[in-house]
Image (cartoon, rainbow, N blue to C red; front, side, top):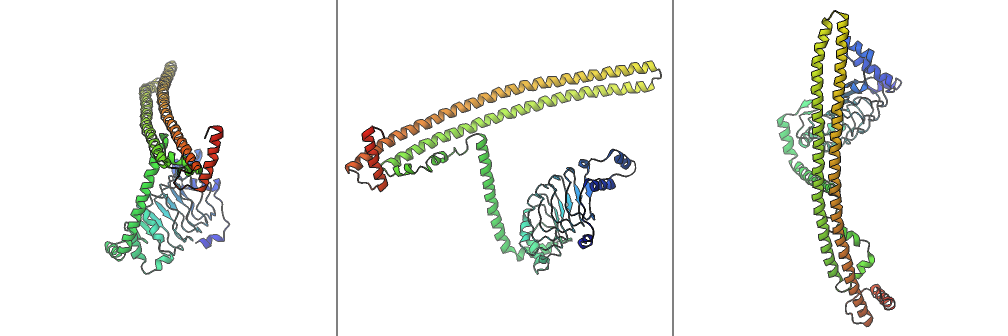
Length: 457
């Protein structure tokens, strides 16, 4: 079929082609005439048929944002592209083209039926986003590796699969393998899979399937752990306390402190550092727990605000609907009276009265809108004050806790200085029995001389 099109000039998917296709596939008779006169907006089109058009490239479909069904079969298309905006697409037919790779489908999260029959595809991949996929047709392609089938296990809704005409369909164990590895499949190559075939396949591949399921369970557990960890971290970031529920902050302070690591060889410094770390981590944990509590308070305040805004808007809309409904009821009576009236002066009088009613309705609706604006402004101001108070209290308390960290750090440095001076004096006097690195001893002499001349360390 593709070779037949190759003798024709490739065509471009321009506005003229799309308008013609929409017009030909639009409503007939009176509705069709009306549609031709007023024009059909591309965004209102739900189904589009562009088969046998000798199309080389998919293009200009961005306006069809509500399209549900797209038929592009029997063309000369080489790449899957230009479908990014068709997020509501449910059915896509790209069969009988020249496509070599599956791509460009990442946004089609609602796609249920995909046909890529009779193309040049050699690998099944890049379908991860199609979580609702139920029907997949890949017959008459160049898929030769049976491991491609295992990739399809992630599609829990997949019930119909076509792979006939591929090199893998010629293998001896083709049907058994697919039935074993895709146990929820109902149709294979347009034939229903019977229960006996499923039982045979399960028995034949039981060992390899058990091993595969074990690996999948481990991968799923790791994935869930990673997702939970990321979700927790995002929550901590929202509370401005990420990485404060452990020793991360303390460890990061000493990661690149080469000189500080040398001091740990001094007698008593290791114990001093450990005590400093324990107390520092306790303060970090206090900040962490306090931050989470304050985050919950801010979240509650935000939820209350959103609820108040929603209730105010809903109540205002209900009042508006009621006023409009009363007006429509009165308007229908007035319109009926005007139609029955034969005297022109009376008709004009009633039209004027109707105009006055419209003006009154307009004023009432405007008043409701102004009331809503005032109500929302008051709610926003109250919310802003509450949030400012919560944030101010949070910053004040965290600053107090951070001051404790600084005090703890100063105390640690004083103790460290005391130990260092005592140790240096022993080094100079030869009273230190512990083995110290040569460079630390050299630093000791240098520092001790410095202390002797300036009185500081």
